[in-house]
Amino acid sequence: MQSVSLVALGSLVLTLLSLTEAWTSPTQPSAAWSSVWHKSMRSSRQRHLSMTATDAGSGSSNSGSSSTETRPTAGSVVTIECRLEPEGEFVPEPLIDGVVLRPDGPPVTLQFVLGAGNYLPGLHDVVLADLVLAGDSSSSSVEKVSLDAGWGARNPDLRVQATFEDTGMDPSQISLGKELFLANGAKCVVVEVTDTGFTIDANPPLAGASYLASVKLLKVENGPTITEYQEAALDTSSSSRYQVATFALGCFWGGELEYMREPGVVGTCVGYTHGALEDPSYEAVCSGTTGHTEAINVMFDPQTVSYERLVQLAMDRLGETKYLLNQVGNDKGTQYRHGVYYHNAEQKKIAQELVGHYGEDCVTECLPAKKLWVAEPYHQQYLLKGGQSARKRDKSVIRCYG
Image (cartoon, rainbow, N blue to C red):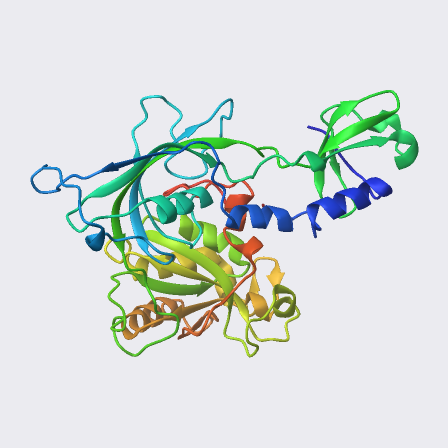
């Protein structure tokens, strides 16, 4: 597809600016896009909820009692059996696990923290709203629920007609399918051309795409609660078997995607840590005056992936920049200083040993974890939203842009 940069399109730019609530740069998703990803995405179509009660030990059936039901809540770690079938003519490049492209494709077991990103927002919605687990190992399921594929519904207001006269555009520069970039960084495509003008569409290319989801709830567990360093070897304040690890690896987009792909990681969150200002904004952190560094909280199952493995992933990702102060790759500044921030005594021992292995020239911080101030919604799972795969064990190159 060809593209052209439009420095200005007069009233057309102003119209789209008001409709998209300000795309702020070519590499930053729109506010509308972030809102779409974090709000409920479920279809209003008729839903088919099937409750099945199966005794795990004997295979006998039992209806279960509401008094013994376990209902997942935000922060719970859930294990589900999931099958996502593309709906209609939508044929995706699978970016998450659970997508099946063959009619006989088997379901996939997924494990994640509710409300902590990863996978589709609609999956979180379905589990929170419709699924419960009874005390007798009963389970609930939904069949073929229509879920938004992550890009939201098509917005007819983002399809705009313009004339060559009003925009001052040269008709020879405009052709069907040409990609245009508006002055505010918003991207759109020419979808119709006439003798007097043209029509552009600023909807995401996959807006309106959806999956038919079949989901069965298998397990509900308490999620991790530690946010700062505790001297105890393990989190004695929580009944959760899950842990949290914190890393600063420069721009947090790429590092988060690296951990999302790691088996045993059940949730991620990016934010700002080890600074002086409470609840800083991205702009404040980037000014270099708050002392914060961009960081990633990684929630993981230590029975599947070790803390040692997660620390080694961090050091490998840093590469030779582990020897550069306040710099990762081409990103420079105190907000890009790198570090491993341990949450308990056991993590401290492992982190100090692995970071220390690289000698005195290594300037990667190895410090107790402090509060992570959660970054703005558009930063969360940024590269997945931009179309890069978060499938477990995916080895494709991570690009540091959406």
